[in-house]
Each structure stands twice: as structure tokens, then as C-alpha cells.
Image (cartoon, rainbow, N blue to C red):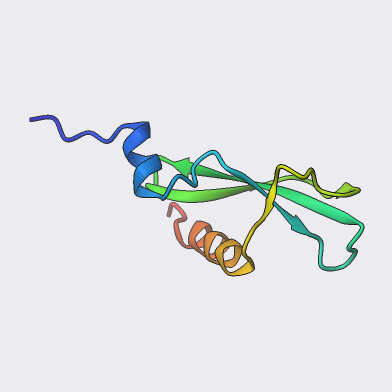
Length: 84
């Protein structure tokens, strides 16, 4: 039997977050925002946020804001999964 996980399995397991893009308003200047793409790290088998540089302007209407608790969890999780 082959029990390897596929990309689709990972996407289902993580509630469809893999590949989704959100935005976050910069706390120090509300005229800037960052985009955050949720990626799967196959080496640690966890989700990893890919955060853009700050962009001046309004976020595109098709993007949703990321929940601050979710962003905090993703940031903490990526720091805990370091290779030693």
C-alpha cells in the first residue's frame, strides 16, 4: 500500500489555505499593506507564510484580510520548525 500524501491531500488537510493570498495592513502606517501567501513546507510538513514587502495603497478588493491570530500562529509555527 502506498500512503504518500499528495498536494490535494495537503490542501484538504489544511482547509484549503495552501496557495491562498491574504493582506495585512501595516501597523505602523495604515497607508501600506503586505500580502501573505500561505505555502506548504514539505520538509517540516507545516504551513509557512510568505510575506511581501510593504506596498503603498489600498489592498485589491479580491483579497481578504488575514486574521491576526492566524498570522501570529503561522509566524510562531515557522519559527518553531527550524532545522538544527
